[in-house]
Length: 615
Ligand code: M6R
Image (tube, rainbow, N blue to C red):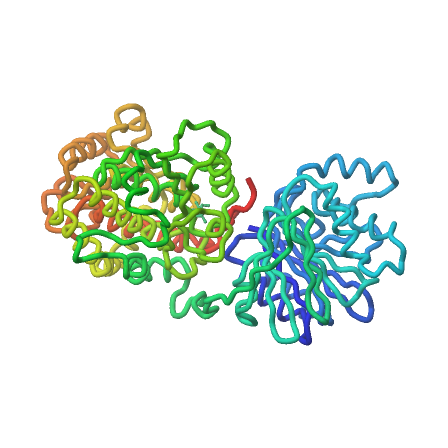
């Protein structure tokens, strides 16, 4: 979603800021902008569209100076336009801010400022904040030493809502002030230079030494270093850490899109999810990061899995896996719903918050709600430096490497593998035998090679996509563990091709969905050889009887399916949980090829953000 990069150091700020913004592109945005302080004062350039459009303007009229702030905006209040883009300036035009988050009481604040005679140029909440900080700045004595810092703090005391922000002012030209509440802001400490950014990736090329600001922290940076204050009564203090982030990992290499690269990385990312976590002697899994004793694990009598989008679909597959392997009741809760509900839970309920980014606002809201009520919350997360990683009581990292494409792919398969590990661990503490445990381990270990086999069918899947390129709508069907895969396949298709797609439990077909079946609407049936196979074929035939084209994802060696389906994608024979992981890969490729054929912006689909940091 919105991204912030700010720089103060010896170098020219513009190239550093633009490079940082490019690293944040994956978060999704619809405009970008930059402000630099120099001998001439404050200069601002902003542009709707891609960063390249901003770069084109800056190539003609570069901004010089070694202190600057920049932003990628994903519109919330006010349309995506040049004027609504950040940085926003105050009434005097001397102060500029970039801001992530939402100022909830901006309407009230705006009215107060209008009553004082101010006139606004945009419909954004951020402009109101800029005006408010500017107003406080102008009411302070001109010789006040910490004038900008004080003005920021005064303004934030009046604000309800969330912010990660950075402010600069031409009357205090050598410094910038950052503040955080609810929206991440990271301080980067380099040699003779400092950064503030919403994501470490924006500064990883320059420094590996970072500190995550905590809520209510206010940091002031000048040539001599930084100083920290707090808007709360909390003791101030920064935890400085070294990040292990290879900025090169986020390069596309020989792949035309990040999404394709990430789909093809799955044999490795899955291995990273289970490496060192399988205990062959005991035929179980070991997940040290859970921070739970064997006794704690035995006492869990219910699990609530929460997340959004793809992470929730992984949770749905996880529900079936945990219930079947460990016999622990599991419930799936959309994080956006869970955070508002009073879901009955007791102290033996474990809450699992699942998120690739660890910054999804709804998932953070859900985990905070659960913790507020005294429940133990664990995270399944890819971003080790995320808010979710810091706010949970423990958890399991995916170690999938950076996922840049907006469409989540490798994070999904890693999440499902982690659910299988957790189910194995809980199951072996309950009733699973050692030989059953060994079987699960073997199936997990076989996955990387089996995924490689599925990936070899990419060209075949592209031909299927060509065949159905004119479809306006698609249906995805699966039962049991494959139901979550049907939802995920439909989500991938929708978000990157803009073709309407629905995922359904197969048997629901006859309860309404069948009305959608016609010659122009392809149905994807997930029908590996499992306990539901015969029932699935029955439903598949009902679609064929109504002239609906059928694409089947079936188990290798199943020749009989050729009598029923128009197109077949084979996956290797595997136990149900592993078949679910194998089945999603062709659906990722199907959506990818379709999007390329239709000329879509695969890695940055319209209106979407990689990390949804607003509720
Ligand atoms: O970072 P998270 O896993 O919390 O993100 C959750 C969803 O926003 C995300 O999975 C979204 O649905 C993806 N665009 C799906 O491809």
